[in-house]
Image 1 (spheres, helix red, strand yellow):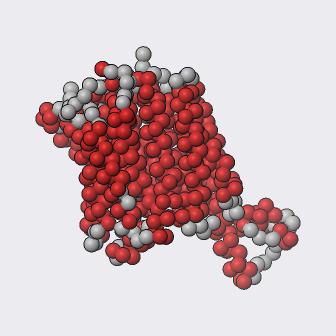
Image 2 (tube, one colour):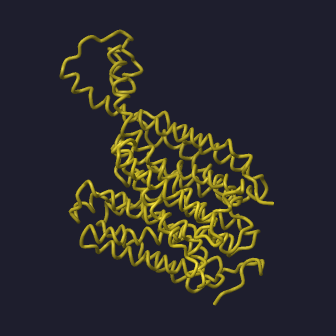
Image 3 (cartoon, one colour):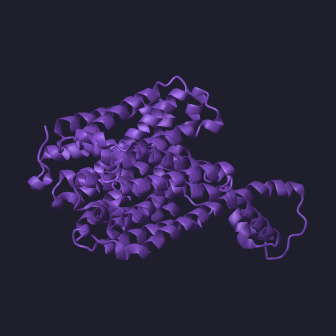
Length: 511
């Protein structure tokens, strides 16, 4: 059943492309799932009688399993073959989606969410491995652009699709929607996808201590990042989770470096090009998942939009990504990757920065151009860094490198969502205090930010404020403080993205 790899022939027929697109569809489905389920958590909570303090576990269970699976795809690819891994992942993901839809209770739903997350996590790096394993070098840029478009569109389309399903159908359809694409992707891949055969001997050198250490590290890191914003980063539980995560991670990494046949080959991290590519992948995850997290929160909490309306506003970025992909693919073949990445991350930083000056009135028109700039920049971020990190690798080394590269993007998203949550939970109090001081001093700019008439604000102290006025102004001040906190999060994200440009000189392809 196995066919020669791309190095043995320089052409790929329609069947090869169809098999690859089936893999992209599976990856898209896995990334989309986490976004659309978020749109209907209240409906799930009501139907399954889930306590509010446990509701977030519907997402956390998926994310923990996903982040554990991603770095293991190198070993799994050796054991099952790329084709076998994808078929097992997409079929099990689809079956688990059916299980989620018909779950009679919360515990059952969590079990199926874990299965979904692990299978979804395996599909993501498998697709990027497929770029370099299935195609000759001249087609790598085109295949990467397609995979990048699928991967980046999913978080953008998630809110609009989730909002539509939530408003039109019942919550089980958030999972049943995976049935058609899952069967289609699995059927096409089974018929047309051809990859080198599996190496069953890989089962014999599975390093169980490394597996346990890395699984504990990634699971507790994800859990610690979830708990720390609410509990506080100095809370004993948060500190314990993060300390164990880092300790287990350090031991797991040392073991992988020490073994002749490690569970995950970490040696590529010693290469400047691959290491810098991973840093850029982390930053892109922080910026992408951070922005996809912050914007819907702002539009829902401050602007009071429905999930479907939020999705329509955010669709702008997805359209910009699609329109830019062909141009980015053409330039990637002709322009130094450092220049192209500099353009991409520069544009992405500018788009984040532009969102850092919102007011309570900011809506579609004000958010249009920042989304366009970010959307254009994303494709210029993905192509050169992926090429530098993965070009020239093959077999198990390629699968391991792809797992690490994609893991960094997910870690960036997890870390930065925790940072954003911390800002949104801790900064409003300080902003409220400052706004009240400015209003009492008669500051017209503070009145404008809060949404008050400027007639009484002429830079002259107002004097005592009666209780009725205080009750009227308080929610307006709290809204303005929330907006200011969102702006803090946007600006910090922009700074993080901008600082990554300092490592551009190391983004060089291997000789």
